[in-house]
Amino acid sequence: MSLDAHLATLQQRHSALEQELAAAKAKPAISDAELQDLKRRKLLLKDEMERLRGSAH
Image (cartoon, rainbow, N blue to C red; front, side):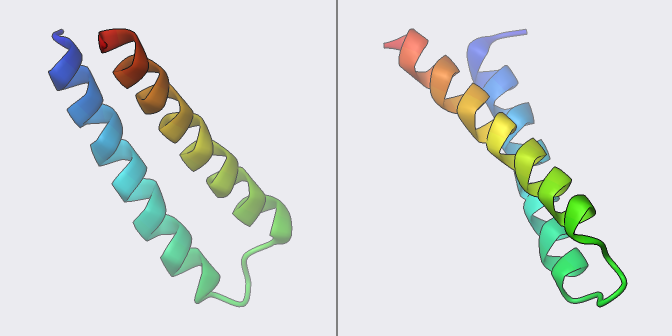
């Protein structure tokens, strides 16, 4: 898989998590731990994308 394709896949996963997080915040039944897990996963994807972009230059 090329770097651009990998970054595109990560971006799609990041966007999906962002939408899931927004939907979860609208639900009063979601726990703080679940919200924290979504945020952590989103941040990990962002960090991976930044790392890959940095290594490409």
